[in-house]
Image 1 (tube, rainbow, N blue to C red):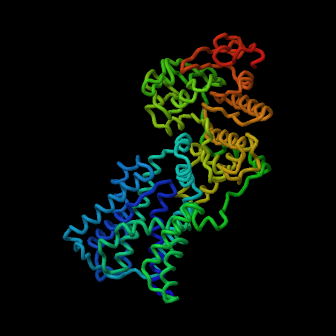
Image 2 (cartoon, one colour):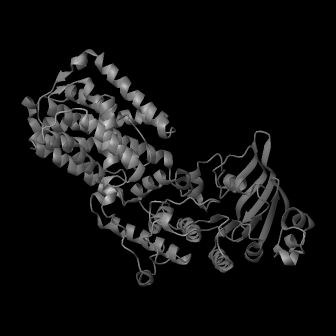
Length: 564
């Protein structure tokens, strides 16, 4: 029933699917892999020495090096201008590239034109499966590394990933280059197995086949492409076994399966298998390792008392004719807990977006921890020591609570991917340190015991606490909390107030946006009040509570002491 070629095509299909998996894991939809594969295949078949001269295996290895290099280089050239595109726009741009390459190859004399070119058959089944094992191994070791978690975070929520200090553009480009190299590898293997290399081997249908294989198998688990390839390559074999000869059945079933997976099984077939989670860290294990919180991880020197952390002069943000913020002057020093209050629409979130670099001011100047937000990239502002939560929770929904916080520790952790490939003990030690650090952050916000729970499965109040734990994991100097007590009862809000106070004692500077005025009055050393995008008052809690302008604009007509 199953011939030798069936097993080879399973391996080749899985390798091609891994080129899609490489970018899908980072939330990218690229259809240019067929173009990378065709360029690599024709270039390698032309430049590599003949197997008659150097032997089959050396000729194949040289061709693989050439093909992967061509694929990676082409991905860099294509990726630099297209990595700003998202979703369907990236898919269209890369598909156009692949089609342009196909037409170019048809019209080039050295490729044999539409007839293609002959290539000696070198690839044996064991070669294909050994190479597939190496590709799968690469992604297996990538997934639990700092690099792998960063890609998953980008896929789940790009904005939150930037705020955690992840260079989204750099990581997306690296994933795209990996996809190009693997597609080039596939192109070479295909050429040296089928013997007759034609441009039509790498058309639109090939790109869709690779995408379907990756998605049906599972684009969030490293063995998903292999599952998808096995499943889809078995369809024609089963057809032949039962005597059905209809070429339309496989593409029909593939399309139907992809639709069903997208609608009902977003994780693909691989999601039906149990997912391995990180080993939980008990409180006893944390206590047994007093250096587990930050021992061996990068640590910051926080600004001293009185040292400038934030300096805003005449800061403003306009959206057309609407002034979201106007002429804001604000000076924050080390160790302060600053409350930022005001009615809905007063411009509070816009202001902290400018401070954290997510939004570029239209007037005035801002300096935060020595950087100019708006001019510096968001991940560089985060690297300087700014960490934040969001008004509307931005968690990595499909990751566990522990993994969310480990992503938050991206800046204090060490790169481990390459060392994981070589099984170096130092990689395991560094990962263990980060796990312990993340578990301690969870414990500090009251989420001990929920490490393995998916972020999406937590209650709303726990999600807010998880976001704070993730922000703490980067060991920030300036912590921005945007309505952290939303959804909490008064007991939980009191516990949060005590946590903020303890963080300030640890040397953190905290900027708190909150509608719970009583909590702000009790927690903050100084309060700034915004109304219609302008600062209308600043001072101690007592001064704010007795300020007539604040009472009129925000606190209402009740007596100040009742408002608190």
